[in-house]
Length: 297
Image (cartoon, rainbow, N blue to C red; front, side):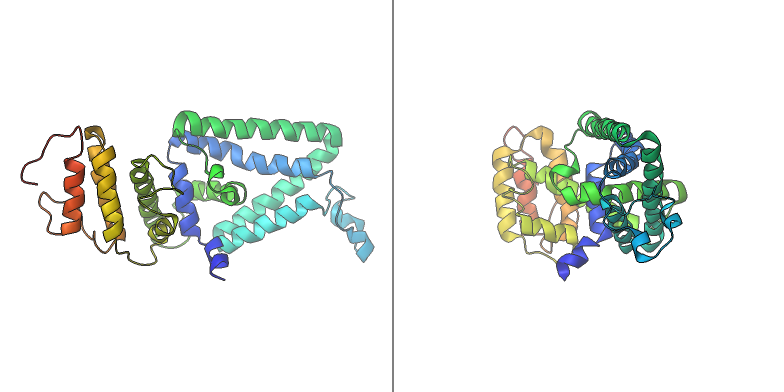
């Protein structure tokens, strides 16, 4: 049950998406290419065998516009996407659902006009173009691997909705509920900070020795406070052995950002820290190899 609720946690998923899409050009590329991927995918699926024929149930042939609309795999995917988006947020989800069915109807008419062979070629070429554009956006502008490498479900199921939600927010200032964007921004910052701190260990997010996966989940979900004594000792060790002076500013920023998530680190850094654990972490960062000594810290 909790796993199902997590699937509809819009705040968490949109924050994860935002952590991978912060560059304005990459965001624009996704706005241009994501929904055409949906359209061209339905174009490819149009020739699949219908699951059922409404005329066999006594409905008029006009229901399918004389066979143009096929209740096949493409329709099933359209229905799943539409219902899922409405489940995420009723207002913007309804708009997304309309767009899904518009893509299904539009791709059906185009496929009938082009013929199955040409429709398949056009759909395949569109997929290659759109996916290439997104990979270029991540590699050249975002300078980070796309989210599909970490979360396939989000990349294929949620991306169209998130692109639409970004447009609604930017153009109309829409929020699913008051304070939504502020909470998402905070989680994006926490996720990004956690990723950078984990990078000090030379390992990826999922194998990071500083923040194990279950700890990372608790940070991102913000469901409970954590006692960080043991993890702070690991972090101190990592900073002593890996950090450099050039990384000092970002290290302190990341630890400060993460401070709001932990009971032992409950305030921002000041020149002199009263909390022993936080003070130890700050000193470890400041006195790391290749860094000058900071007397009196």
